[in-house]
Length: 418
Image (cartoon, rainbow, N blue to C red; front, side):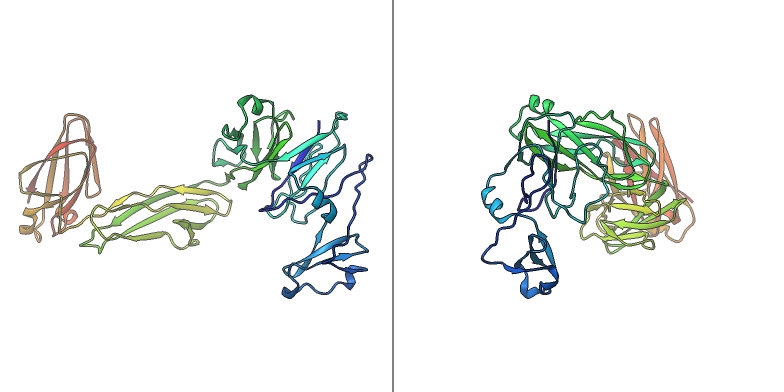
C-alpha cells in the first residue's frame, strides 16, 4: 500500500520527474525555444516587472526559473514531462515525488507520509515506499468534493480534547461502503497531540496544550481518488473572559433612532480586542451604536472579545427593537384595564402629563392564566398569575412612555400613588 500527501494550487497542478527503483530522483530539463539559457544563477539578470512571466534555464542548476514578482522562482516541472502528463492521474512505481517550498508550516509528519507544502499557493505530492513492503504500483487521481472535516466542539479550553471528524459528501459519486473502505490521514499543528492508536480513521481525538487558533487537514484516499481537505479551524481558549452587554436608546423620536450597546469584560489576562460586527476596534472601543429609521426595526450587534492568552469570547448583546414615542402601541388611562399579547409594547400613560413635576409612583398590575414574566422600563418581575411592579415617576419620565414586555397574553392596569 502506498501513502500519499498532497496540497492544492488554484488552477494548476505541478508534477515532478519520476524516480528510479532505488528512489533516487531523476531530474531533466528540456530546452524550450522561448527560454534564455545561462551557465549559473550569477549570470541571470534581476527579476523586474518588465520580465514578469519570463523563463530562463540555468545549466548549473539543471532546471529553469520564472520571474515572479521581484525574484526568480525555481520551476522544477520538466517541460517534456508536463506535456506528456496531460491527465490528472499519476502512475508511479515504488518511489517518491517531491516538490519543495520554503513556506512549509511546522506540521506533525509521523510515518511514511510527508507534506512538503501546506500552503494554498502550490502543490505537493509525495509517494513514499510502503513500510509494509508492498510491491504493487499505485494510481492516484486528484479529486475534490469528497467531504468536509471539522471539530465536533468549538471553541474548547486549553488542556481539553476535541474530536476531529470527517463528514462524507454522499453526492460526490461514492457510496457509503466506499468511504468505509477509504484511508484517512490527519495532520495537526504543533501543540496538538493525537490520542488515536495510529490506525487511520474518519475521526480522531486531539488534546491541545496551547491556546490560539488550531488548524488541521485530512487526506482522504478512496481507492486512488485522493483529496487533501483543509478542516474548519478550532479556537482553543486560554484564560477565561467574563462579559456583559447592555443596550439603551433606539426611539426614533426621543433618541433620533440611535441605540447604544456597551460591553463590560474582565479577564486575568489583559483584554486586547473588541471586535464589533467583524471590525477589530482594539481595547478602547467598548461601545457600539446603530441608528434606526423606523419603528419596529430590530438589531443586535455581534461582539467577540479577545485577551492576551488567545482567548476569544463570543458575547451575546440584547436585541433592540426601535420604538416611536409619537406613535405608541397602546394608550393607557389611570385605572384602565388593557389586554396585551405576548411580546414587546410601547405604552403611553396619558395621565402622566398632569404629574410630570410631582413625586410619586405608578403601580402596574398584570394578571394571566399561566405563569407570567414581565418587564417595564427594564424592571423585571415574575409570578404565578399576578405580578405588580412599582415605577417611580423618575423612571417613567415626563413624557409618560414606558416599554412593556410579557411572555404570555396578560391583562394590565395602572394606578397612581402620590
